[in-house]
Every structure is written in C-alpha cells, then in structure tokens.
Length: 246
Length: 270
Ligand SMILES: [Zn+2]
Ligand SMILES: [Zn+2]
Image (cartoon, rainbow over all chains, first blue to last red; front, top):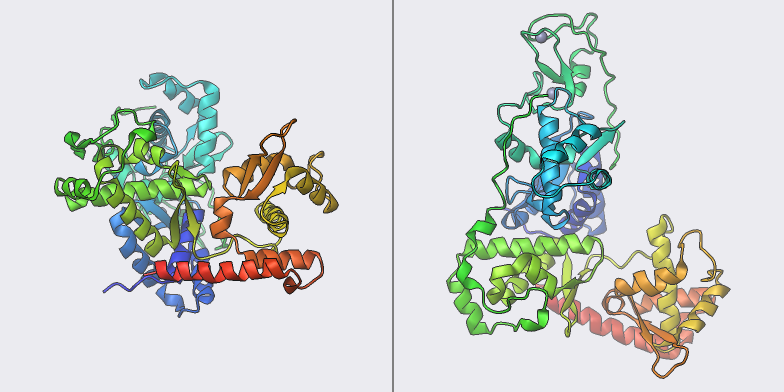
C-alpha cells in the first residue's frame, strides 16, 4: 500500500523539479526541511519510502525520482527522470529535433570513446554527417553550452562527458542502443564511461575513478584485480562526501 | 575512432499511436480562434475511441509541457498547447485539461489558472508558498521580487492604477533611478515594463487620449492570484514606519480579499 502524498512530498518534488538532481546528503537535508515545514514525521532512514510515495504518483505521468550512482564522485544521487520512452523525449520541449540529433551523436561519440569523453572538435566534425540540418560552428557551440547548463553534459577543457543526471536518466536508452560497446566497471559493475583502463592488451578492464580510489586505498603496489598486471595509473584521492547541489 | 552507425529509430512511439481519424477542427494550428471547444458529448464520443492508456499518455505530455514552460514563468497559450502537444487529441481537450489540473494540484502542489479567458492563457500558481518575500535578501531573484513588491505596493496604496511617472518618481526616492543602470536590476525600466509584465505581475497600459502617449500600471493577473495584499500592506507600513491599520481602506480591502481567496483555495482542495 503506498501512502498518500501530503505537502511535504509535494514540496520535495518541487525542489527536485528545480534542481533536477541532488546528491544523497542534499536529498536527506531536503527531506528534513520539507517535513519540518509541514510538521510531518521525518525518519532519517525512511527517505526511500518517502520517495516511493512520490514515485507511486509520478508513475502514471511517466516520471520518476531515480536513485543512481555518480561516476564522478562515487556518491549516490537522486534525479527526476522521464521514463516515458527509452529515448530523449523529456527534452523535446526544450530542444529542436535537429538539436536532439546532435545530442544523440554526442552520446554516441562519448560511448564509443575509450575515455568517456568527446572533444568539441569531434562533435563539430560529426555535424557534417547530419542529414537533418547543417549546424554552423557557432550554433553547435551554443547548443553544447545549453546542454551543459541544463546539466546533460559536463565540460572540462573542451572535453565533453555525460553528466551524472544524464547517465541516470539515459541509462536505459544507452543500454538499448550501445549494448555491445558498453563496458562495465570491474569493481561496481555499473556502466563505466570516465574511468581508468588496464593497459594489458588482453585484459583492458575498466574501473571508475572513485572505485580505483577505494579499491587501491592502502595497497602498496597497485595491481589489476583481473590480470594482476601492474596498475600504471595515478590513484585518485577518495572523494570526500560533500553536500553540494551543483 | 571506430564509429558504429546506429540510427536512432526509437522516435517517440506515441507519435505513431495517434489515430489519424480523430482530428476534429482547425487545420491551421497557429490560429486558436479556429478552435471551438468540443461539447461534452463530443468529448465523450472522443473518449470512446481512445484507450485509457492513450488518454493517460496525452495528459502526461500536456502536464510536462506545463511544467517545462512554468520553469521560465512564461504564461502558456492554449494555441501552443494545441500545436505542440495536444495535436490530434483536440476533441477531448477539456478532459485532458481537467485531468492535468487535478494532477498538478494533487501531485505537484500547483494550481492551474486561466488568467486570460479571451486569449486562453494559463499560468501555474505555487500553492505551497508565497513568492519569495523581502525578508530573505540573498540573490538577485529575491531582490527583484523585493522591487516587484514595492511597485505592487505603490499601486495598491494609490488605489489600483498609477501613472508611470509617479512610479518612477517614487522609486527615485528609494534610490532606484530608471535613468541609470542599476547594480542589481540592470535596466530597471525594462525589468518593470517588460519582464514583470511578461510574467503577468504587472499590467502596463496606454492611457487613452494622451499626447505624447502616457502609460499607467495596475496589478497583473498573476499578482492578483499569487500576491497577498496583507503582506503588501505590511511592507508599505514598514517603509512608512507605521501600522497597517493606519490605511483603513487598504486594510479593509486586503483583509476582505484574504478571506475570499482562502475560501477559494480551501474549496479547490480535495
Ligand atoms: Zn565502479
Ligand atoms: Zn588487467
């Protein structure tokens, strides 16, 4: 039996609509705030039940607050996603069809890349093969900026990758479209985009950066968990759980 | 770089499900005047030809359209809903809007209000909060609503309609000069006469028979439903270092408006 929604649920949902995605700490904080505001009972370990209640009402609307893991910081996140299609229909009111074509291309470039990134040059070049509408360089750059601003992509030094929100929301789409190209993280078995790769050509397993940090912590000589070759990459620091919405 | 060509074929499948025979009126989507609202019997007949799932799906699409538009605080025109989302389902439009309004209310805490019944324009009012008040003063959004509250307050205190020059003079006394670029608001005149007007907080109307043309301000439809006159009066009293009761007429109006609007809200809550 799902519970009825009250104003604390509605307020939480409104915050999710504004933020799009929040990390676990921030979700817990929001939960507390919403319950305080409407004087409802707030049980710290009941956040998932609270969200289930909202989700039961969102289901007929093809929306969902979905829990997912961020390969950037290794934290759990909650994102408000559209489950209507496995495609990118949620964005159709914000983006024109030819813009979505370019976004699909960008996803493809990122998925098939080794590094989980696509450079702006690669994306620009891919517009040449678009049949719908030729995009000018400035238009493409403007579109990429919008996709970053709307939290679909992230950008670092001209390299674009899929945002956590995008991965959580688009995972079913990406799994359907690129099943064969996808690689899983050897440690956590989630899809791996941005990660480190074993350099042994017969092995080539992928491990997320946060998973690398946790796995090799306190190990004096890092070795690949699959083939036992030396792990030649820099071991990142463990990400401190910081609550931030950005 | 190896690029496997995989053409996306999974276009929104709802587009394919749409029965072609359902289109009722209007070939020109842009022209809302061509659209006559279907009668109840037409709606019922339309519903017979659709599965519950199709109606759900369409309602969900309309609802998402509202949510996305509302994020930008842009009023939503019926003509646009028809053109972009409802499309071939226009013969059951009243049912879709009814369901959308109910869901917005029950799930999102938002009230769907038709602010312009002639041009059929809707906005969403947040039932869970007043627009951000003057007390919290962080961020430009709050400063803007502070300015908005002051302008609404001036209009309210002057009886509902105020010539624009009077507003500019009063704002100047509060160190907001429309002749100068303001640090927080930028072009103040543009903010007040365009942005606030577009968001339907204010109306900016020509005064007939004025040469050169003069304008006056009054409260816009969003302000009427969203902004509490009691709060506005309290703010104005604060600015004058006086008590709200000192303005007996406004005090009476604010409190009578309060009782009618709270009745309206409670009756719409199911
Ligand atoms: Zn991993
Ligand atoms: Zn290996």
